Image 1 (spheres, rainbow, N blue to C red):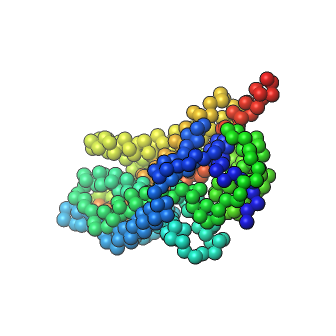
Image 2: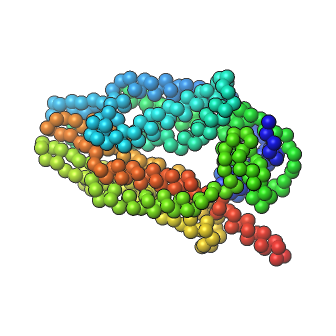
Length: 420
């Protein structure tokens, strides 16, 4: 069915574009790229049953987590409890529909959709080929946007903030949600992209051999970023998963810089405007990100204050600087040290979404602290801007093509070999 040129055991590293031959792996082993140290393939015992069991268990835990109260609070004899389904409703009532959508998408819908997709693909449900390819593409596109574990960390931080005001307790759904976070992470770990696509449609027989240890672009071949199939560099549509793309992401640096500049413009008012409005006995207090960190520090919650400071202040700033540096380096400036810049890219891609922890802290606090005239907490406009900053930097990291960092190394090697 596929007419692509492909060696069955060959793989092009999606990060540095090096052509390699995959070794035979035993259960529990993984293969990493010798140049950029990125994981190319993992082999699990029962690669179909393990993700199936973890995904099914995760979905059961998620259903249980939405049936019962999640957390509760008592202040001066007044009590309130909230469920996971009530948090977006409260934000809608406060006219913060954007935050409600963010919560529903990243904390509930996307993780649940990914688990359902794993079930459909691993359970061998008889689906049309187009639907199976669509589900596989959607799974790997959305897996980095699930933020259930980040929300759970935000819940723990909100507990520390609320202990100064009253008694905090957990409901029946708290433990199931914790188990859901663990199980869905295990389901993702047990899914290997190459194995999954080979089960959807096996790779074609070898036609032409290529030189190992050399970049694919120099040999006029490229790998599909979705299903890893190797094909001619000028073939823009993958014959297996039908993903349309080029050998390098078109206008990668331009898109990254545009999103980066947008995030910088949003970050300034996000730190000036209040992210949380606290009403205590009729008096209102506006809190920004930095004032929240200072209050936690003054209250003696040093670890939590450091977590919020690192996730909400240091990480966004360092990520913006790192993305700017990566674009500068990929554009041909600076020293050629692709291994170092690749490590910077991996760090940017990994830690970026954890800045959303402050947004989820505000979501929990605004949903739980509703004590009438005694005490109430509402989100401020700053939290919306800060959420947009995090999303813009995540999009910027995804539009950046890390293979551009290694193209300079390949060009330098070719120039040196031509001189010799």
